[in-house]
Length: 162
Image 1 (tube, rainbow, N blue to C red):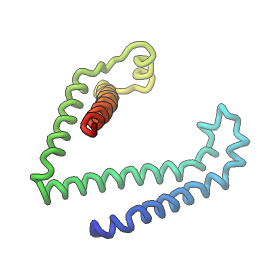
Image 2 (image 1 turned 135 degrees about the vertical axis):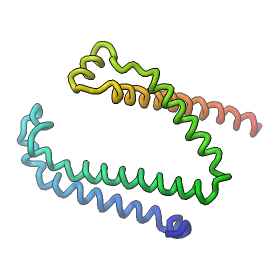
Image 3 (image 1 turned 90 degrees about the vertical axis):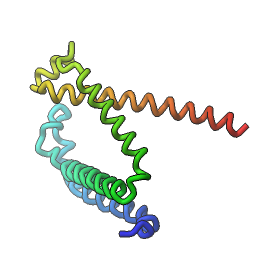
């Protein structure tokens, strides 16, 4: 597929795929909602009637996997086809990777209080706990950083346009 084709028909194709996925996910939900409604609320999360939602979950996971694969393939293709233009992106990716590894090694694997109880009850290993902690910390830092950058850029644009 060429860039022109995707630029012209991509949004339409994406919307069509969205509609098809929603219809496929809604068919078992509409067909089984009466049986699911008859299950007491405290048992609904474990009841076999809750399987009506599995099609939507499977579709969501499949689309996520496809999106990740496509993003990786196109990113590698872009880097290989034009490495000079990709240097800023590679440097940014490297900085994020270094920040993640620093936060990973600094993360507390044991936790305290209810977090420690949750880690123990679900038998979460030390490595997975540190991976989750580092990921959450990186997400928070990136969220705060994006807010700061957005505010600074708006102030910059205000004074630049005066």
